[in-house]
Every structure is written in C-alpha cells, then in structure tokens.
Image (cartoon, rainbow, N blue to C red; front, side):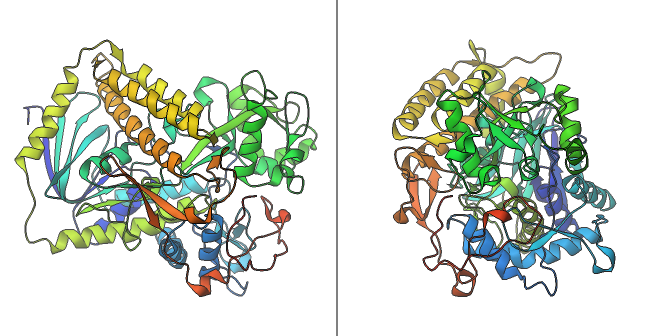
Length: 595
C-alpha cells in the first residue's frame, strides 16, 4: 500500500449502498457482526426511483380474507417469468414478503393506510389480487429513507466515492476487495471474511436506458466473473416501452405505465394508433414486452418520429383526469421538457430498464460459486426469468437483503481463520497502477459509446443470428482497441480511471449477453428473435455463462404441483388497471404463451 492508502478489515463487506446493499448491511449489523459498505457515488447520490409518476411498490403481502396467499404470488411470478424463474427462489420471495413488510415498518417506513384495515394495497400490474403495500407515489424513496435512517442508527460505516476494481480471492475463497478513491486516487484494501455484491445490473450497456450515467455498467458481472463466479441469463433484459428521448440529461427517464393505463394512446408518425396491429384486444394496456416490441417495429419500419421514437398522447383525456391521476408524470414532463401533456404528446422510445439475469446464485442464500461471495438485487439472478412482475424487484431485494445478510454474517462467524493472499493483493494493486500509466490514443468514453451503439443495433429489443454474430465481431475489434487506451487524471479527480474499469465491465457484460442471446434461438418474454419467432420447449432452460466455459444450458427445476395448479392467465382488463379482473381457467399445459 502507498502512504496515501487505506487498509481496513471487517467481517462482511457490502459493495453497493442502494436499497439492496443497505438492507443487507442492516441485517449484518443487527446480528452484531462488523460490516462496512462501500459505493462509488457520494452519499447523497444513490439510485432510487427514476420512473416519472412511478409508484415503485413495496412489500407484497396477501390481504387476510381475500383468497390470496403467498403461494399465489409465487405462481404469478413463475407464470410471468415464461417458466424460466427458479421455483425455489420464487417461493422464498413470496413466503418471506410479509416479514419484509414488518421489517420496513420496524425501520420507520410509513405506508398508506386504509382505515382500520391496516396498510393499503395496490394491485400488481396484471394480476388479480391487490397485495402491494405502498407510500403514495414515493414508495421507493420512502424505502430508501427508512433504510438510510436505520443504517445511521446502527452506525454502519458507509464509504462513499470508493470504486472497487477487484475482489480478492485465494483458492476459490474471497477475502476482501481492492479499489481507489475516485476523487484523490488513494487506494483502499479492505479485508473481509465475506463480500456481498449489490452493484446493480448491466442496462447501461445499451444506448438508451433508464439507468443514470455511469451506473449499471455491469460492474457486478465483471467483479463476480473475475473472482470465479458465473452469470445466468444475461441475455434476458427488460425494455420499457416509454423512455424519454430528450433532453440529453433526461434521456431514458421512464414515463410510468399508468399513463397508458389511464387511457394514453400510442401513435406513429402517420398518426395511426398502431397497437391495433399488435394486440387489438389489449391495445396500449398490453404487456410491457408486447408494447416495447410494437414500438420498436414501428420505428424500425420507418413509421417512427425523426428522433427515433413514437408518440404517447394523453391530450384527448380531460385535463382534470391527467392532473389528478397522473400528477407526477405531468410535473416531470414540465420540468424535463416544458411539455404540458394535457395538450401535447410525449415522444418516447423503448429503453433498457432492468437486468432480469445476473450473477448465478443459490436460491437458499444467494451465495455464488466463490466461497464467501454473495450477490443480491439486480446483480443476481433467478427470480424473474424472461419477464418481471412490476413489484418483484423491490420485494426481492428486501427479502434477500435480509436472508443474504444473515448468511454472510453466519459464514463469517464460522470461520476458524481469515484467508489472505499477498500475491492477490499485489496483483490488484499492480493492475490499477498499470492502467493509471496507460497513455494510448484510444479514448475510454468513446469506446464505451461504441459498445452501447453496437448493443443497441445488434442486441436491442429484437435480435437475429446475423446481427448477434456481427455484434461479437465488432466487440472483438473494440477489445483490441482497448489495449491502447489512455487514462488521464485531471482537476476533476480519478474519474477517467473509473471509466476505464467500467469499460472492462461493459465489454464483459456485452460478450456474455451476445453469446447467450445467440444460443437462445427462440422468442420468449423479453427475448425476441426475429429468426426464431416461437417458443421452443427445449429451451425452457437457463443460459449459464463464463469466459472459460462459454454458454451452458442449465435445466430449470420443476415447479411444485401445488404452485403449478395456481398458475393462470388473466383478462385484458387486468393489465395496468386498479380493478378486479375476471380469471381465465388454469392452463393445463403450464406453458406461457407470449402475448
């Protein structure tokens, strides 16, 4: 270590301080085990909620006497996953959701209430039962506030502005992490018995994304893989149909689905309400995947706007309806574009929103192939399959934050000795020093933009064999150019060094995505192959990837009979609306049709 370096030791290290990272750190601290959290952003700059007008709903809990049960929530999750979710993971999340609700109440979260019936519930996007507790239109922010407050009460050390470059591993066992301060460049060596990755997914590797600048670049994927872990289903990425195009600082910001649910219509540049061609029954209230595919097709076939979008129009609705039912959408567009949606349409385009796949983890505790290494939140995989129930991302991180935090604490407590490897530490230090000295003519940010462009063109909403193969060839060229990057430290600090590591993460995540998408020769959920438009029953498998073994097919465990019997489709009225729809009969073949 240099004289400016920091050397720390803890039982559990949490990389990431968003909601999943904080929840895990809280569980560790409440168990009386030492924990440190590190993240690359400043303390007041953590990703929370980006959906305009969004109600990121919180704990999913059945209402007593409604006929609902945790088993139905598990069945809904598996059905919507197009049968690719891990049944054990779905059961664990559904079964422990009520505990997550009570935990958040214990941390001081304020839920909306419904008289003397307790916490109010909202209906999941396309399911029958109202089971999602919420806090107005600010649930995600309220969850973040409650978790931050509890972390402060427990005096959990949170190190801001620390970029982790490598996990330290010896003989298949993690023993900490190495990184640097993005402002002054000082090095950090953190020894830890166990490490929890909570650094998000890889949606930033596409040109248009709801992720903010410099996050979700695939850091968790690279850190895990370089440590010896594998990825599962990185090709499965959810594209939201309505992301803003302009202005640049708001590009990718989501227009919540409630805008369609309240009667907003989608129009192409000919003024046609084009959803009649793709889902005449549901129209704009169709599933996210179907609407994103329809918008993409209109744009691709030349019926989009000049900027590459379509129009979402609410101007035909009564002004009072928009102001009372969609106040945050209305205000957000005024702030971002000075656009009054009661009079003018919104220009939107499909936007990469959520990584459904991620690091391969065990359903019991989200441990990985590497001893002592865990992954949670969007960094992990197993729950969502090829389509995500709207609320499951938030409930997943609360459930597994608790389970994984406890597992990491117990793993640390059972160790008889601490693993260490001076050679691994020296290798991590040398890697940073080598990159700092890089003085080539290739610009890191330009290369990253090239990756985002190729992923948008070759592996966007719709893919095919030729495009994916071309994307891999282009990625090879970019990797060759990376050997000549230049890293430049200036008055703004060491951010260019962080960009160089983010580029490595982006390239690894892009390769995993392209190779797995090439192998998944079918259309299932969010994965659209124009050359394989149908569902292939033989591909009801997870694609597991590593740089050494490539893509391997892993069978999805069977769904328990009692859960399978609860799986059903719902009528079009269920999509996006707050009302009780009519159920269709349970499907006999249990195979989910793409809508």
